[in-house]
Amino acid sequence: MNNTLASAPHQAARPGTPVRLAEVSRRRYSLATLRSIVATWRDRTWRERIRFRWELEQMSKDNPHLIDDIGLTKRQVEAELAKPFWQG
Image 1 (cartoon, rainbow, N blue to C red):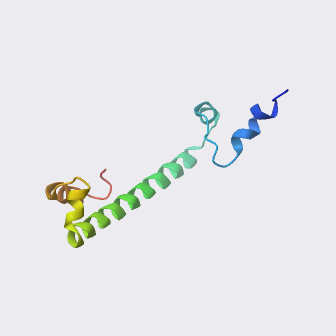
Image 2 (cartoon, helix red, strand yellow):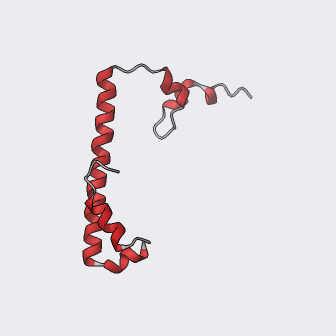
Image 3 (cartoon, helix red, strand yellow):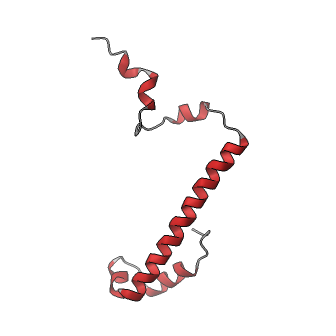
C-alpha cells in the first residue's frame, strides 16, 4: 500500500504532536517575538517558583513531618525559602 499521507507535512501540525528541532530551526522569528517568548517563559517560571516556595512554607508550618517524608532537612527548606523568586 502507498502510505503517502502518513508522512505528509500536515501530520506534524496536529495538537500534541512534538515539533521536530529541524522544523523549529527553519522558522524565523522577529526579535520582538523572541522577547515575548522569553518573557512568557520567565513569568511562568517565576510564578511556579513563588507558588512552590509558598506551598513549601505552608507545609513546613502545618505538617513538618511531611518535609522529612519528601527527603528534605529543615535547613534545606529554610535555604529554599530564603531564595528570591528569580533564583532557581
